[in-house]
Length: 188
Image (cartoon, rainbow, N blue to C red; front, side, top):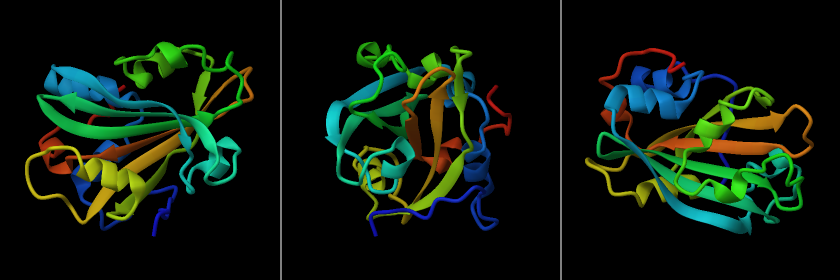
């Protein structure tokens, strides 16, 4: 199955370290930096491409239609921690997300959480199977240990107060085990 079963809560049988990271209320970038000190964004892809079927409705396009996409890997402590995937409607308002073209290797969170006009919608959570396109991307990242059977992910839709074009950000955790020794703060 290429779509995931997204829900508004984490399942009771998910590992506590995964749930702690999934429920981070503030910037994941800030939480990773606080924990590990070293942090970098590896830009994997930015441009036009087909929107994923389970995110299409969130940005107001039909599945398979093209959107602006950005895919990065967040590295902290010398290890890949998160694969982030962002999609925004191709013909959307450029004024809604003026920084899009110039992000480069900057974290999207470092921009979104500083802009007081940007509001994050409700978080959704999923355990992605290996067949999901974002799980396949996460599996392609070199990491220590055996690739899991399931990948934990979260997503949210962001909107600007005056904007019409929603932006969806999905974060897939590459290494829940590597994050398990962390304190359970909110990353605010």
